[in-house]
Image (cartoon, rainbow, N blue to C red):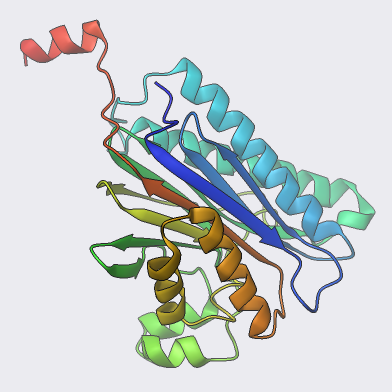
Length: 274
C-alpha cells in the first residue's frame, strides 16, 4: 500500500551563512512513508561522505525490506513493529559501512554522522535516531520534541545539572555522545508513536534548533501550515537570519488521513482462532 495522498511531505537542506559546503544529507520515499536525515562531521568533505552513505544505505535497505515483508508483524523478542526493526537494522548497517570506509580511506579518517529517520505504517510512526538530529511532532496546537539528543548537554539535563530552558540557551550544545561511523557498533534508539490525522512531524539537523528556539519553530509551523514547502523555506530562512552558523536541514510530514494497513488473508484467519 502506497502512502501517497495520505501523508504530505516536504524537505529542504541549506548550507547556511557560515559553512562553505553542506554536510547534511536527506532522503525520502513517499510510497513507504520514509524520511531520513543525517548530519555529517569530520575532516574536509568527509562529513558529507558519511551523511551521504547513511542516507543512501538506510533508504535503500528500508525500501527493499518494506516491499518484501509484512510490516504489520510484531517482533517477539523486542516487541517492536516490523518497520521499527527495518529502520534499526538499516542504521546498524550504515554504521558498519561508514566505519569501514573511515578505516580504509585516509581522507575519510575520523568521519561520522548523526541520523534521524522515520517510517509511517498502519497509523503509527517508527523513529530511529543516533546523535542530536531531532524529531518533533505538532499535535493539537502543541509542539513536542519526541527524540532526546545523545549529547553531553542532554545527559547533564537528565542528571539535573541544567533545566530544559537553560539547556536551550547553552552554547555547549554540539558535543554528541553517539554517532554513526565512530565505533564498529552503535546503539540505535528506536521509538514508536501512534499517529493521528493532522499531525505534523519535523525532522531536522541541529542547525535549526541551535539557531531557532522551539517557540519560534512552533509559531512558524502554525502560521504557514497550509503549505509544508513554505514551512520548510521559512524555517531555513529563520535559522539563517539568526546567524546560520551551521548547515540546516528540515523534513516535514503532515498526516492527511488514516493509513490503516490491509491485513492479509492468512493473518486475518489466524486472528479468528486466537
